[in-house]
Length: 217
Image 1 (tube, rainbow, N blue to C red):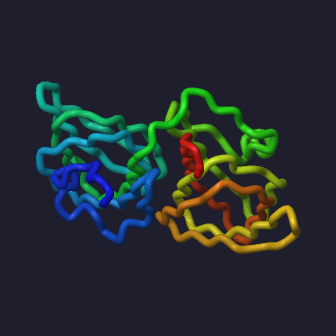
Image 2 (image 1 turned 120 degrees about the vertical axis):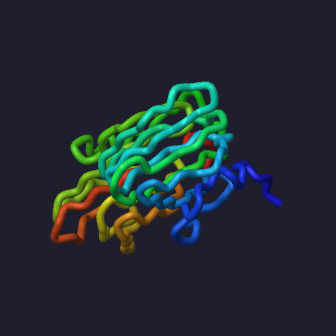
Image 3 (image 1 turned 90 degrees about the vertical axis):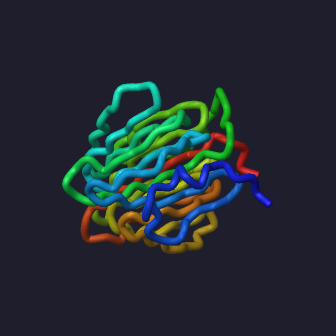
């Protein structure tokens, strides 16, 4: 049985709005929804997280022994949320918001050597770095309608969160093809591989790509 890494009380009331999309030895992904005025129980998070905000909002955080602070975020914002002490969180804004929370179960590495065909090298106009640390590299991916991305290599396991709908044609080095489809707000698990991509959308699409700096066994 997998050890429980998150206290039950860490999940605010009515926070999970759909089945957990990813749950493995590396990450657990939760989609949380909070309505105006909704406040969590007192809880703590024992592991670091990446937070992808699907809607704008204001989260009021009250940590024990610290001043209350408001965290404001825009739709599509992504931020690092380190493990911390006991606290409550409250939707202090006037609208409901959803957050894709990526809980990191692996410790990561201090140094990473990216391959020659790393996406940031191959398509720096498309793959933009949001932040990077020992556990993750987080990139924002913006693709124009019909745009192609040359062959590139994803060296690590990853979680991809779609901020908009996306439909992508993938071409493997042997010439075989496959299609990847995302609904807005959907999170998917990805493993290492090499391919080229082409948007099959008539509109631009945007993704958040979270590379996991842990051995992809």
